[in-house]
Image (cartoon, rainbow, N blue to C red):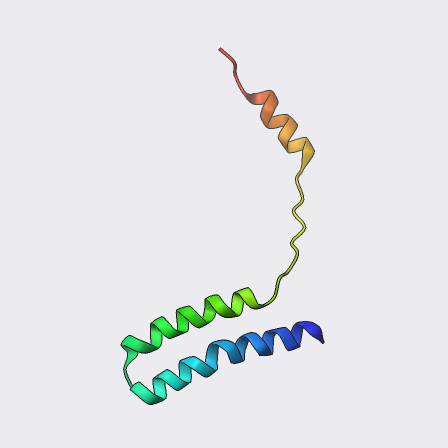
Length: 69
């Protein structure tokens, strides 16, 4: 349920200012930068931890393949 709430908050953060600018100005030149800016803001709202996995066997094979002159 938490992911749905985060997605809804992000969607509102992007869509509300974008549609407001589109409605008020009726010019695409203002809408596209607003869409980009609000997307950056929405992406920064929630921090997600990403677990990065490193394949130790692949690293060992790559190091073994290096030719030393």
